[in-house]
Image (tube, rainbow, N blue to C red; front, top):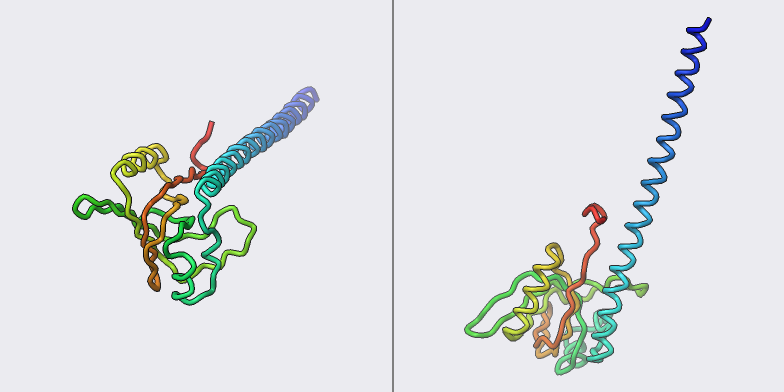
Length: 182
């Protein structure tokens, strides 16, 4: 009889320990998720604030990429003007003493607006060596990020590519939920 009571008590203790450990693990997981959500929110806010600061400073044409115009209309709208363009750095090339940044166009992140992707696929942007040093420093510090926001003065537009001069840029910090933020 005593062994039955001891067995029942032992089983109850195991059940209680398992149940309470599960609750503790669930609370820890929820706490970690909340912290990750907070970090992600802070990164998004930082990116948005830095992009907004560039837009306020340089007053580029924005939302030009929602245009459903033919190329000639887009040329009339943006050639000779500054635009803000989101893109991912594909390559950096050097021709003689000139540097060129090749971007793959991407839609505006964090936007509640409808993103109509235009026919534009790439941007080729001339920039000076001082911007190369700054760009490399930033890219090295963000390891995985090659996406950014670029203010350029547009020189030419063809059916798939914008060409222009780099005025300023911001490389966006990216959030990786699995990166092990502490």
